[in-house]
Amino acid sequence: MPLLSTRIRHYFGLDLPKRELALHFSLPIISSRFKGTSAGDDELIHKLEAAKEAPHEYFRLLLVEIKHINRCQLKPQQRLSLTRQILKLYYPMALAQLTRLTRNGGVPEQDERRLLLDMLVEIAQIMMISCQILYAGYYVSNNFRYARSRNVLYECASRIFEMLNLKQHAKSLRYQLLEGQDWLIANTIFHVMNCYENVTQPLPTLSRDSGTEGKAREVSLRQQYGLLQTVAKFDMLRWPTHLQWVIASYFHSVSNALQLKIDEGNCKLGRNVFISYCYDSYPAHGSRLESPQGKSLILDFNGLAEAIRKDCMGLFQAKKHNNPYLMPPRFARLPETEHFVISDQLVRGLENVTDGTELEKEQKVADFRIFVGFPEVFNLLHHQQGRFGAEDRLADVLAKRSALIAEDHDATEKSIWSLLFQNEKMLRLSTQETEFTTPMSIGSLLAYGLGEDINRPSFAVVSRIFRPSHKRVIIDLQRIASYAEPVLIGVTTSAEPAKPALLMYDLQRLGGWGLLFPPRDILPGIDKLTLSRNRSTMEVELINMRNATTDFYLFSTSLTSEQLGIVGQPDYPVPPVKKTHAAGWII
Image (cartoon, rainbow, N blue to C red; front, side, top):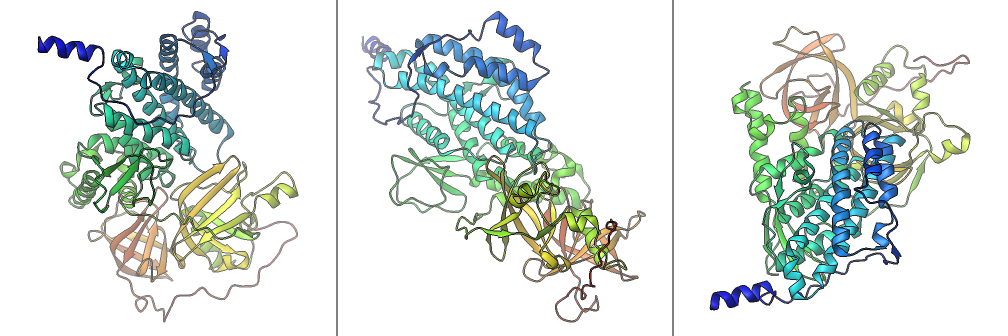
């Protein structure tokens, strides 16, 4: 009899705790009847099938059909059925396009790429709201209806997180961030589910329901929320778009990547430990808020951090001994040519990075000149320090503005660089983004100077890209050196000819002299290099890798100023008087 009584109480939801946490969802007003075509309609399916080779048309058709569904009166079962049908049509195609669009990310952005990613985000947002309407309806219902709909509640929560993760991925490819409303939804739903339900229970994914290959078939709400927070912690605005998928791969491959604990309110947050609040419009914080709203959870990333440290050490050992069997399994699955770049990014992601939010007043910089990429910087220095250093090249003239060529004078005026913030470590610049904006991407080497200061350039790397709005882009430059000169280097044990490199100096950032060159399979402490400079050669020992990008590797070296015949701080020679030409410039 007690067993039967328990089953009856469970059936009617009498054993459920009182749901006291409010959702605070901002849902659209439902004011009209549904007049659109069913997503399962044969005519629509036929149109979408015919448009599969034209992604823009495919998503445009889908968007037209679903744009108003969240304002339409639909019974819960009807809305649930329609939502499932749309997601099956949307999700596989969206994943395929996100994979394709990982390439060619940077500045300037192609309009076609932007429009497609914006459509993916808009559809994901519509479907997320549809699931919120369902979730809210079941959540506030009586215990009997709630108990009978718990599977749907889990499904709606999971689909919301899948749409948030997809939206986060799509926006990252444009170097944008999730909005405050997205984080409010993510934090609210997870805290609510964690309070009343089992967030570790494996749930079927859209990949399984839609037959998408190569993706997880089941995942828990805890994993979905954890991935959302992990991607935010590692800041995809600092990653090349073609490597942004690495974070998700790493997170899912480490069993204890994230530990979640109820906040007792008395523990100090340590390294790699964050706190998340129920009604917060931001990702997890590295310090406590003074007057937070709602419940809070502790997010401990030390498991992920320890895995990254061990893997990066293992990578170095495998390279050092030239032994693929020593390669950590997680790195073995990553592109070999990107190993050092990924390692560098992962380690930097563990650091507590300050983003320079204390921005100074915007300053227009009308004659800020930049040269982007190792070949351009090498050629600039080679030209300046060569016999034709007094001649202006066409590249020198075009480097004055972010818009190399503009349709008219006004467009060029609006495209000049603005200085937003600077300190001894970095600069933050902003410009109007057009198709003529100086091309650059994460990891690009830059030589820069204000006006004629380009004759005595400073050097930086593009460390972060952010698009706060359409046609505006903000670039963070991490300073790496104050002096450089072009040289040639060769590996003493290799028969390959000497190749271009930059001999760089910066006491604060390099500890003295360093070498920068395009990515090559060279290891500090293992390979000896021969440096050719001023018609003389010398041996160089690499000490530590300071930076690794797809554009260059930068190492500190054992070189001293005395060895190079330099007294005191290195300095550029007095620049020659520039010559102008009536017929053009020397390139």
